[in-house]
Length: 531
Ligand code: AMP
Image 1 (cartoon, rainbow, N blue to C red):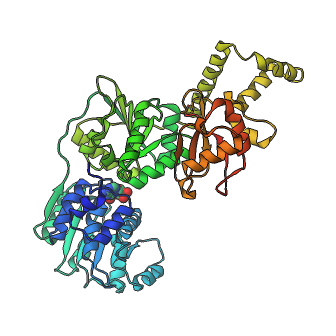
Image 2 (image 1 turned 90 degrees about the vertical axis):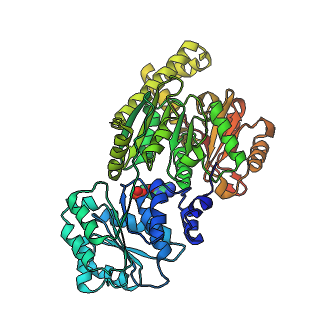
Image 3 (image 1 turned 30 degrees about the horizontal axis):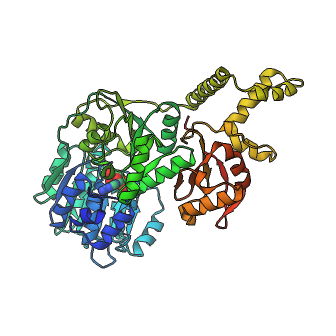
């Protein structure tokens, strides 16, 4: 398996500084559009790229431009975008790539006071990103000079055409130095754009990445459009997804962040990416295969070559960068005649990339609405009802009946039952308020722990340099239990899960409440159930 960013991006003959920046951004390997575009640009060619948001096109032009920026503070690259949102987004991405090379990128767009932009331009930036109207404004004022420009990027050219910017684009292109490289990206090639390329580009290399690919027919495919993907995913985990799933993220950083985001929401997930040692990978895979965690979050690189059975759902938390990778990802479910489901999240801007995948794979990915608050509530009600039914069926709650008869002297049976359900739902949070009451072990169910064990959540982790030994020692001493009875411990950056035997769970919770580990104050509470 190739997981080393250096080797992969290194193959493209990039400066060490840029490779470091890409590693910091969590990129593991170049995307297909980057693999093809970067060498062409580094060799001095003009490039026409048929690519949309979601393919990694920004870095495809950003990386080679930054590699070619001279050590001087004048403007050397101009990037035209159709909207201010895209200008800001591109400036952020290019800024990150250029961070280690100390290259500055500035977005300029209408709606922002021009004085502020002029001051920023004077402070010395090498790359300017803007909408055509505002760029022209600066050209006319002389606050952006074109004579030092060696790169022009036209991003989302067809959208610029749709928005009526064609004349502004041409005016800018006309006034640029002839000795320059032009890179033009567009999802489609309408005639006016084609004629611009003929007039203003020199023997451009064409890069397109959509080959026909076949898909696994037994996978149902849906997509969700949302700006808050973590919230959307949580809703799906609460209401719809019930099984073993792989969630794909674009970057290592994305994987780590999602493990934490889900962890703090009470979902137990493990991450898999190229920064893990072989040992760590093996441990994660063992747990996932054994069903001790049922959410695996991975990058494409890390998931390559993994053979896992019975995956019920594949979630594309980030849209894949090309159709082949989509097919690879979703092919991990729906195996051996089982039905699989593939769910893809997109942001509004990524709609085109989704459509491109649909076309290349020749399948309809159906739009779906995320579960509403009402759906989530309804599902919770169903779970409560079925939990209560199973306790009632077991008929082993006699010891609690005396509590109920005491209360029913003053309250109706319905009120007492409803209060008990509330207590069960709110768990330790409600109980923390009244310090005399303690959580009974029977409150801990279905939290991913092994039989006879309960899982607890602690708000400290690797960031506090907490080790497994620290946790075992503190709990064993404080609760006066043998360290060896403590089960699996998962330490994450900001939190930790610990398995404790059911019969001492109450004690551990009591003694660890507001206690400290290695001088850090800890908050310990039962891990929330996934369902
Ligand atoms: P774009 O198509 O340029 O809008 O990029 C879409 C997203 O992909 C952005 O969040 C980028 O940071 C990310 N991205 C670009 N290249 C890579 C790569 N090689 N590996 C992982 N993520 C990437």
